[in-house]
Length: 101
Image (cartoon, rainbow, N blue to C red):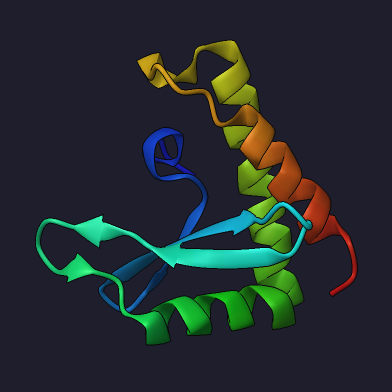
């Protein structure tokens, strides 16, 4: 977890791609591509792989839960100076990740 979670949201790396991981309005873990200057947008294949990995790998889920909790605490404390606070988004992700897939 790093301060870029305040701007990008929770995300994972798939090769050279970054994929934002979040809980949709129904509490389902989903993903969307992140655009990087050097490599452009993450592919749909990378998004699919990232979501599948989060949904099937208990160790990855546990890691994301720990990092989302840390990010939430930092966002509530000072939000790294960003105008948008993603603490509620982190809590929704935590809640969804803690449910059994």
